[in-house]
Length: 457
Image 1 (cartoon, helix red, strand yellow):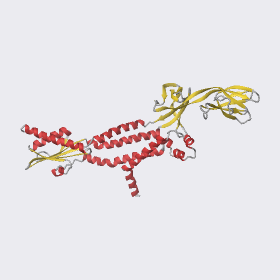
Image 2 (spheres, one colour; image 1 turned 90 degrees about the vertical axis):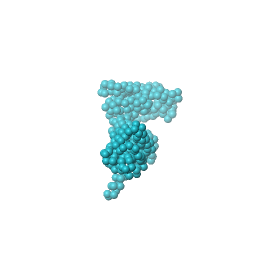
Image 3 (spheres, rainbow, N blue to C red; image 1 turned 30 degrees about the horizontal axis):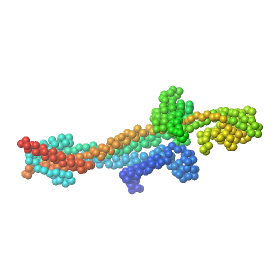
Image 4 (tube, helix red, strand yellow; image 1 turned 90 degrees about the horizontal axis):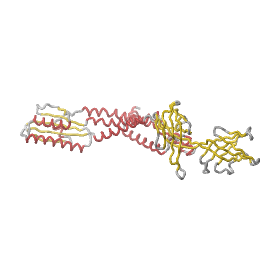
């Protein structure tokens, strides 16, 4: 059991686990791009068929609302745990590098470095030490000395970019912020639709996939809706003019069009769709046997009673294009003690033989429609956390690649052979660039010696 726990822990804290999780998240994001997000389960079933395996997978794995699904939230959590545990595992090693000073600066040790130099000074021990101290101080700032220059041996270490050791943890923190923002948006955010008729208002957002609605702390009223068409009849542009109300008070007006959303109190509205509803229709009912006709005007919410015939006429639905035959209206006729009868009535084909309900031929004399706007509504409270995380990630990523921890060790020894200087250097990354910098430091020390010689010191 302990071996299983240890193996599981090693995998969770491994780079391999992080790579696997990132690949799965990337594939999930691709799926979330290919499959339209926000489709209700009923729409998925209607699109692919109730018995379709594809519809089953989409609805049961919540692929139509992937970013709010429990398994996607689980993946984000596991990746965050992996990064945190990796940080905890490696941070002590970084602290060891931070505090380790390499006090053993013997010439024998420095010669073993892959980047090392040795040269002889023609000046006294103290003059040599003072010159090196000055050059390294100008180049690296503060230096740390380990021997007093009175014992015939002196050593120091000069370093730069020490904080670069911790830049990788900045990347870890940035990724955790991104994951946190995504998780907050997934749990506390929502995406849904609002359908508002011109002149009406609403504050309920019907959530995607879920059979429930969220009540907004404000109301949205559609004051006007306008649509422009191309010559072929395709919509060119459609715009919603809305007003936000708090109670009965108008607090803000806005125009929403495609690719120009509107945001209020963290809730963003996108122009997603539109359509027409029947507002009023004038029908002509003809009884061929009696040779009589009657004209009635009907509203969707106000059926018309034809007293002479004892019937009630209802308008149930409206289609802008019914099976390629143009606009049509669904009409039902109710007679006392009889079963209601109804049919779709083609507006542009008044003499169509199917325009018949019971014993009546039905034709549309006139009709009026009203537009409704379909607004996609989205709230993502974690988006700013994600943006901060991405900004920090870019900063720390550049710092990680272009900022390195550079060390130069120096040992000056005075013995019977005179004063000798031993130097070694090491960089945490970009060794070729540091080798050039190290050669410049050595050359600068040699130039300082030459200047001293020219001045006759």
